[in-house]
Image 1 (cartoon, rainbow, N blue to C red):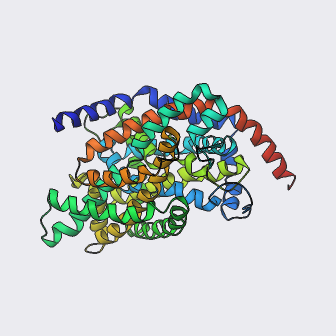
Image 2 (cartoon, rainbow, N blue to C red; image 1 turned 90 degrees about the horizontal axis):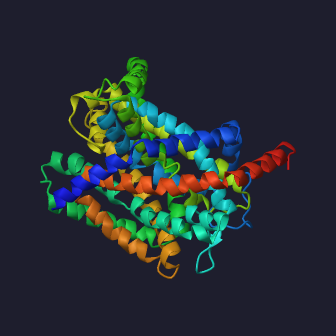
Image 3 (spheres, rainbow, N blue to C red; image 1 turned 120 degrees about the vertical axis):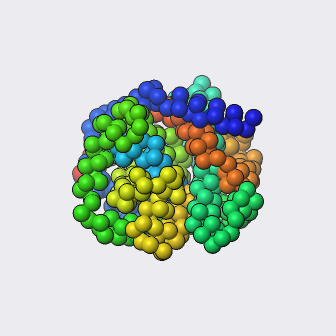
Length: 454
């Protein structure tokens, strides 16, 4: 019965990720980019200035500084999607899927600019009177109470989308394949269960401390995590510098032919790329606006500019480096492995003995930081649906689900998360389009003041 349920989830996932979701995410991103007159791309330099703290004001409303808000959002995006998700994309769609991840990410820049600006512009209060942001709040505050069923629907599927199933599964797989098996420790359901329990205890200690502790932890962990991973992957790439251009040629060629995939078609490659890009940067899904909606600022456009850096950092930069490491070492051709194990094989091939252990450390950082950030989103979703009085219960549910993810099938988990992400995207993007005139008006005023030096 469990196997049949798993097959059903995978089939539904494949069905829902078709033309409608592609039009929604790619078309929505293109609309936002044109409607804003390319503002997100024109003001990238200013966005980095904001990130340095130049415009921080401790007296403004909110809970997190700009940097902490972006770090919390990046903790949920610069994670397993950049290590394991890229490997899954190449396995399912060949190197060409990476090109469509780039396209989706570039359009996702404008999507995040709009959604995260709205998250501050239309902040609401939960039942405890605490200021909150996110799609569920800007839907009800911006479009009216008649739209509350849509906001509730988003919150319900959001609780599933931000569950720790994938991160727990891949971290467990990494520990099993790199640490346990090579050291002659039998890998079994029991070993996965024990690993899951240990992870859940560590995560539970952090997340029950609340958003301020999460902001402090991710603010320190994310930069270190990205630095270690970046140095290692760049070493792999430039140790094989003669293969860099051929790797890019392979990506661009396969993006339009699907030659690397048996029976591959252009449509299938695009779908794989967009699915994995959504998993990587979550643009249009509505999770990042929940973190950025907690930023200490009264200027929505400023927070939108900070938020739009997310897809650039995690998909354009980090995912590309991972993809190059896998393609350059030819492990995607030579290995039958999937997920994080494929990436580990690439590291082991380029840096014998030590490579896979370095990746294990990086993956631990990636997975744990995501596991620290995701409960915050789930808490906000449950708080919106059931009231702030009960929102803390999500933390306990989250900790238990970590154990379930550790012992579950990877492809079923990916299917379930993809279904949830698609169902989150529809209310998020559609309502953002309806509210986009508010962002455009505020943008004109903000950039006018910026030019005047105010």
